[in-house]
View 1 (cartoon, rainbow, N blue to C red):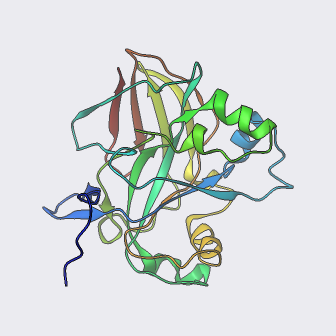
View 2: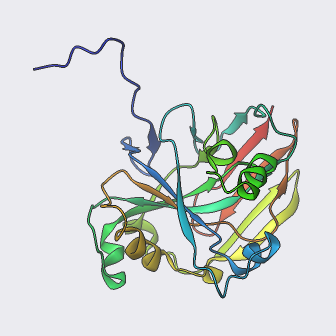
Length: 236
């Protein structure tokens, strides 16, 4: 029996898949905090004493911005902030669900990878951090997750190394290597699966390297990870 909703439910957001006319339906977006040592230090933390933690972004069309290959996404500058930051991240798409996944089995649960941006209202995030409050207003707002096309694991192989880089108006601001992740992708999947039962459609944003910084209207960001489709995003 079809449910009689009082208004039409929100449509599922889908990400394009390289080499396919199908789209990947997004279920949940999990984000890893402080997963590069240099970034943890620039944010005032000791990565040797504090393992990364998890937070979430909304999975709806208001938050997720699919960025097709070769396109330039228009990203509106958000309200209530004067310090809007870019954070480039490797996005891992889950294709097979599970819980209590062993690290050595994690790759079997990966559908593919993409380049993503964890856009952050840094001033609001810091204010909430200082008050011991949740980060939602700094992290989980509209248009906060531009994500590029997915490259299937079958096409790329496991991504354990490779340059991760973001440029703002052709100037490199973030540059590191995936080998600098404190917790590898497999370890992250294993740890996350002890807290949530992962399902097909889940995305994991695996953390950002050092060099995060502000962007303003009129600037263009180009985010690149070796082996994946880069994304271009312009602030408007």
